[in-house]
Image (cartoon, rainbow, N blue to C red; front, side, top):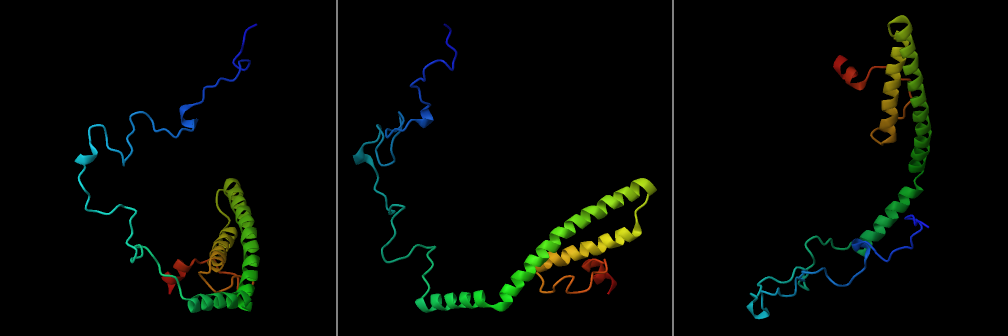
Length: 175
């Protein structure tokens, strides 16, 4: 009967990188052991302290002193005030509403894009009314993102007028 590789009993061979061993590989010399050519008496004394040595009276260079109990208590009470703030929770509620509107607006952008492609293929030119709506939709998306990222406190449509379609950079050029 012929043995196939799957019929063979598992071998005891384990790849070298998977064998747990406490012994260093052959030829390895630990940092604190002298090499065979170097005798312990021939080592030069080091003037520098070991790297892990920190003087007992000095904190490490990147140490940040702990805040006092009063500072920590005032910070905790400040956070508590923010959590209880009606304005913070109202802003969060509006942000949830505007995330939903932002998601819906992505579908509307896609629909406008498809319609414009169809107009272009069928008539050879774009639909100007759809292009104007697309521009105002782009400005609306900008307003939504600005509000959602807290870059603006101004709430977008439906709490303000629908944008006219000129981008803020275009408005600055005309003024």
